[in-house]
Image (cartoon, rainbow, N blue to C red):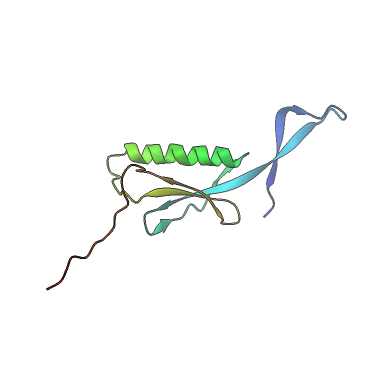
Amino acid sequence: MLPRLVACQGIRDPSSGKYASIAMRTYYFDLMDGIPTRDRQGLEFLTISGAIEHSKDLAKRLRDDPRCRDSALAVVVLDESGTEIHRERVYPDKPESVMALGSIG
């Protein structure tokens, strides 16, 4: 998939006087708590850092939601190829849930 080109108002090529085009890339924000919830639509950002900042905002919103209490929950940022570029834990201060088996018998 080729990146979509968007006219950028404000950056002008001095030699031609035309506006430059900037490639917008689509990033996907999956929710992961063992079983992923896939983001099928994605959002476009100019930079990876913009996508990462968005994942931090999503994690904060989930952290502030009283219905959401899974300590293993994370927002996983994927690029257009499906490569993970960032993982933002919703509860970074809590250890992930680990099932421990006690001694039997």
